[in-house]
Image (cartoon, rainbow, N blue to C red; front, side, top):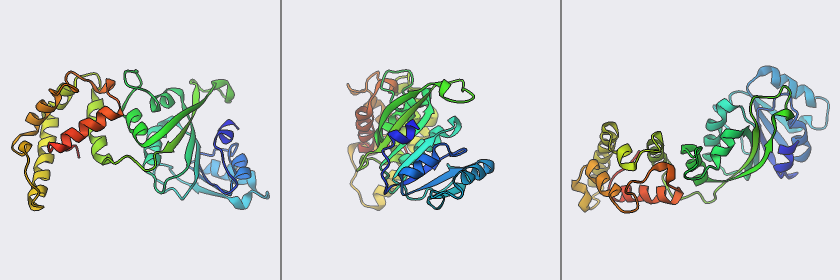
Length: 273
């Protein structure tokens, strides 16, 4: 199994397998690791994978949890291996990005377009919120392409195997606030920052956040700065008029640009969460 080979599993590793199906990958994972915890939604597949190892030396090394991988609390693991159904791809990536304690790596097979989104660069058609968030929190490598003829029956799309390694230490940024800004900007990624940020609902939300923040600052006796008297609308106008942001669009900005933009807004009292 190519995914197992690419996972670099050691005899001391605890492996988390998501969606084992009938256990084609589970058996080689058991042979290489200390033990495997498999999360499987389908009760019929749970029976299949347990039957696969019944009476073998691998039986005691396998634990199968029946449940939804997105809702199930993950146990401790060193390596995650998964052939991911398209409908949970995004939710699973975000769950892994926030998982603690940190794991060594996750090696997963996705539909090709989804896999390419993870490593898309500014200016590319597939560049999106998922690209930016994943690249902020992890190093992502495209390992190999898997043709549809490797499956029976063949699916309609090609697949790719991707390795994800969390950045350790994680970047010093409030992720809730970061994602609040990124989500907003990528809703209309080809519009200028000014036209995205200066909509009535966005201004309303940012003004509410600003009032909350100012109330916290005053109760903490934090000093006022020059921007404290301005509305979020005025601050946005000031920021997006700056040379590095003027007429810029989210689709063309990279991680450093977004980090600098968030820092600039925060410094002036504008918060996205």
